[in-house]
Length: 433
Image 1 (tube, rainbow, N blue to C red):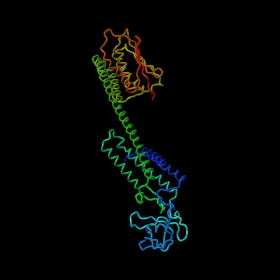
Image 2 (image 1 turned 180 degrees about the vertical axis):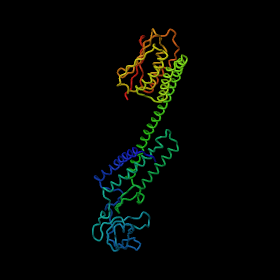
Image 3 (image 1 turned 60 degrees about the vertical axis):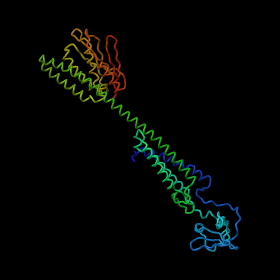
Image 4 (image 1 turned 120 degrees about the vertical axis):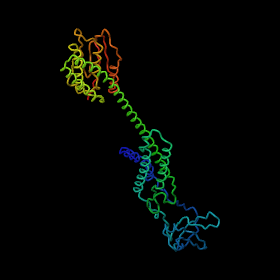
């Protein structure tokens, strides 16, 4: 049985509470009415007794009371031993008549022994109240702990659907534990003063014991069942959350995969232009920036959040590549307070925004494009003036939609898109580290 420490502690606490509740009524009995569990019934003196008799004890331990009229009364061996009777004792008693015709009468109650009133209480040796209470508490604590532990077994907590075999096995196991514990229940012996297992007593069925036992078992099973249902619900919620995380990771990887090909093909076109124009130094620098950009994509493609400082370095690398393509016509302005450089945002956020600004606006020497990247009150803003091309390029909307989806999946918030006809701005809340 696999139980965590927290489970064991919780089970012990509940078992202790059940044991205290079960024995609370017993404690009341200790201070209220005399204890009479399993005490032999002592009949009241309401039957006339035949007079004095002389006890004769046979070698095998059985006794017979002989009266003057030669009548005799049988004295069981157990009574002779319990009451320490001896051969020749003079006794005044009453008798039990035999239930069957011809049956010999037997000793019922002793009133006087050798001329003195007979005191039954001196022969009953009951254990101390503290001892009995301690044993009872430990027993019911153990009973409750076992039943609760069986009900909260880890294999059941992690099983979404109960099979018939599992239910039958649980019921049978609980039944075996209940029967075994009932037979082993500690019961005081009035004669010896010892606390013995229930099955060793002649009268092993006791109504008070059955009542306590039923209460303890019922509460333990009910509590264990509730804990099992709660644990299984928590386990199911953890599985659902795990599946959600896997789904988010898969979707994020798919979205990142949409960025790389678009960026890759544009970069190759710019590099091809430098090679054709035989601009060796710029081509080498371009290759370095391109290498850094793709290294950044590979290293951070699986990361959900990255520091703003790393994202800005990546933006500077690919802005250089755009600067090569649009020499003296495209400008980037970074207005970032150092305080915000450690704040975080989803990786590869700036690339699609700069790419869309370049793609959808006219960029000429007479109309250069200025892209501003700044942080205001914890919000990252990327803005550019709107200068539509005479022949707009076809757009699938993948870039901006991709960005919206990634922020919704990773951060759980929506980005703000502002288009007033003159300036296009995208605002995104940065996350404190």
